Length: 112
Length: 114
Image (tube, rainbow over all chains, first blue to last red; front, side):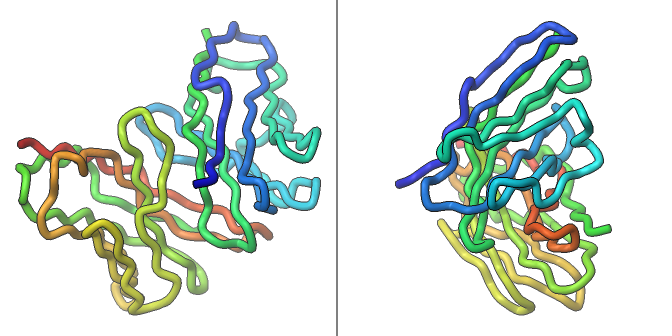
């Protein structure tokens, strides 16, 4: 069964460093998303991406964040200068034709 | 804005007990409603969905009915198993911003003891 894969599963980084979280969506999907879950809190929408551009972003998704689909298969989330409060589980998701979203296993980001 | 309120956990049950996890929502329009499940160490998996009022979603013995009059989508299972231990998330589809994003509840951790 096709699945969304995310790497790495756990990333530890120093405050102020740049991190790139990687996702490989399901191959025939057209819509891509990043969500995050701070420990003990809700899963929150960050950004959606369609047709090689951002279609919607939340107020969390400020200038420190960017997304890219560099090669037609990967979908990346970059955090330019990490802060302690960026520590969270980050989930990538994809869907096709606005059907239900398929999620990856998540990347746990720890900023120290 | 659109929001989901979900029964706070944790919930601990014995095997074969009846499960209800309450979920209510606030939304403009007619969103689709979902239950996602997260097993330990895994990602979010769609458990069931309903796309319009009075629809019943069902999967693996779990059921939820889209109730427009009470704005609810409560998750039920008649007889839980140890393998059902997981975190359950209620969610709705929000199309107000131009894409079809999901708005989640806080999640309810279920532990089923043998």
